[in-house]
Image 1 (cartoon, rainbow, N blue to C red):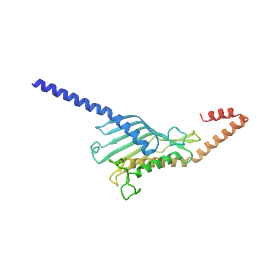
Image 2 (cartoon, helix red, strand yellow):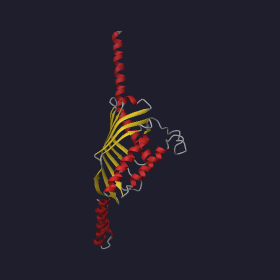
Image 3 (tube, rainbow, N blue to C red):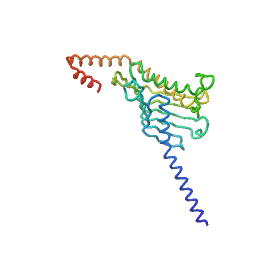
Image 4 (tube, rainbow, N blue to C red):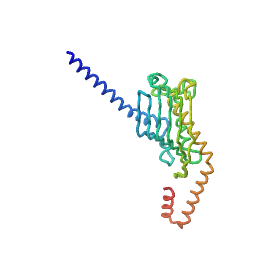
Length: 259
């Protein structure tokens, strides 16, 4: 009888352990799918993640090679590529209404800045703001209530956000002209005063600050950008002059110019 009980207990341990292991293994896929589903809804552009690392007991998550596409009408393949996100959550808060995020570290963010004003990121910012408007409380803008299937869900408080080793690629007429470093950034207390923000609102606040830092760097380097644009224009005129009006030569010259 004891042997039977031991066998049953062993089987239960194996089954439960196997189930927990399966859940653990699947969590990275679930998180990856969630990001790649909700991300485009919020930003209006494609969002992909190469892989996800999780350590649920310590509350640490890592996103590797996070990439955001570009809005329609822009030439670069992506608007933002992040080498790695590291997110540290208070595990005890995961089952509560407000999740406490101790730290978000954004490492190696490459921002693609199209034209002098970063028109592509202005469009993404508008998309994010439009998305977050749907979840505002009654009495706030907009007047319309959010759709029934778009509940705000859990809220978050983010203690610290770090942007490290970032860069800005200035793109004009489809060509990357110059890369400049982005200053490191440290944000604190997102959602603390309000008792928690929706994930969409937290993303909006972080993106707004990253956009502002990129815009500041772009403004400080406007002279350099204009110089590179002038060089591009000069080379374009040289191609036309050397071609003697031959369309094939012009086409080849332009293709070489944008390689």
